[in-house]
Length: 273
Image (tube, rainbow, N blue to C red):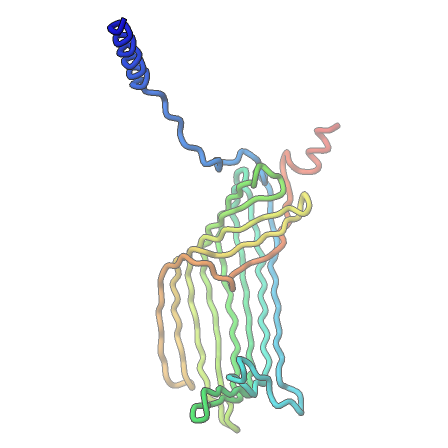
């Protein structure tokens, strides 16, 4: 009897070992992202829009004002004004579903007139500047390619990634007035960049969307040429690559989409009839 039980036990162990030795097909690991099949923006669509920004600062310019103070009086006696202005129209055409190519133009202008500013680092360490002025403007053109991916197959929410090749030209001048004399520096700037700009697109209406984008990856080249007091010349070149989020480079704008071909309003109404 014991011999029969031992033989039966050995047979069960051998059967289990043989079953465990069979190779089962391994299913690929799926993170659940995949490639969305949802057509967020159809082929043939025309997109256009504009980003606009304007900011002003005016401090310590009244007749009885002793000057604005900041950073626990570390910087005091501030008086002056500043403004920044930005305009960026853009255009795109969808060569395939969710994929567009386009162009954009950016113009930025800023001005600073600093009447007075004092920096105090202690009783024996303090200095100030007065009658300092700066004017800068820059224009750039870009060729873009953008791909949209719908969020959870939604028709209104999507993320996108845009590749942007940019060339820019700018001029700036900084000068200081000392009585009747004027001292300053004139500068010319050339820029080139290749950037990756991800963002989020939300359709508020079938033809109107709000977009938020921020540059995180870029390869850039800058060349600056200076002329000081119309006599001294100098130049500087910089280049590099970066992967970081720049909060100052956040773009918020409105885009309008016009559907053509079978997706146009006229074609849809004809199909319904």
